[in-house]
Length: 60
Length: 341
Image (cartoon, rainbow over all chains, first blue to last red; front, side, top):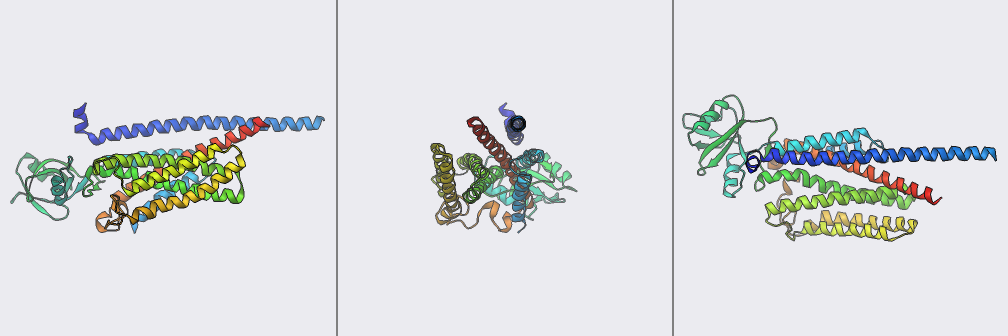
């Protein structure tokens, strides 16, 4: 293992750094997906409430 | 100066594309380009060989550096008659004859070659390894050597951290004028992400300092001033979390962030330049470091391009994080107000 580090130090550092970037990007993409889902459902909920209120106003 | 144009372009491309559609909207282009610039910049910054001249090699050897720089040998740089090798600057040294010397000689007939060598004396070297020069080569920076690679991470993180605090100040002022929730949340999110960037810059700087100056913390003026800056923004978060009335919280934190922005500029640009310190740009420093120095030996296009790629990558990452945090905060506010209603 240490022999590999001595032979290819830059490639090992590159591999570790890219692995960190990949982990971070995947984590951010996951948060982004959840956030968009939440935003979407909240927008839908608000839309439903507005239309329900409109219907109630008309009936009264 | 061309290299300053590259840096400004890197930041403008990053912030421009990242902010393009507005910070409260999802942008696929922003995410894709973050990955592209970060991966490309990181790869080039880490695997590009660092090459210099025989003088750099001799100096690095005298300083006891573990990894000696490659030496750039132009085509036809090897003379078989007197067994000498010439570097890119024109300096010629005698080489110990061995099979690697013969291989370098064969390779350098038409191609630019990079050689690894041990110095026997100031006039004689023993070549141990060689490769055909790749198209991208980083310049050797005296006294930094291989450690210079961390510069491509530490400096952009620190610069974007400061830009984040400027954005906090701008949006705090805009909040004080317009009293909009959006401005308040962007200011708060920017301080949040900016602090994360500054902490990462501080940690990467500490690692660099350990290998370059001997200790993680050296009581250097810039280290102290950035620590003070982090404490100022810690105060901002504590202040914000301890006021329950939302209107007062927004108004006081916006005023605080405006003053903190001015303090940040003083702590970053003025205080470290008034005192003697280890960082480039201090009172006793004749240059302003390998990134900003206008001197001939610090002007390298490859270095400037890779640095601007990293600036673009980190700027895009900043806008992506800022977008996520701002949208989360705005959504939370809307959910809270719906639940209260």
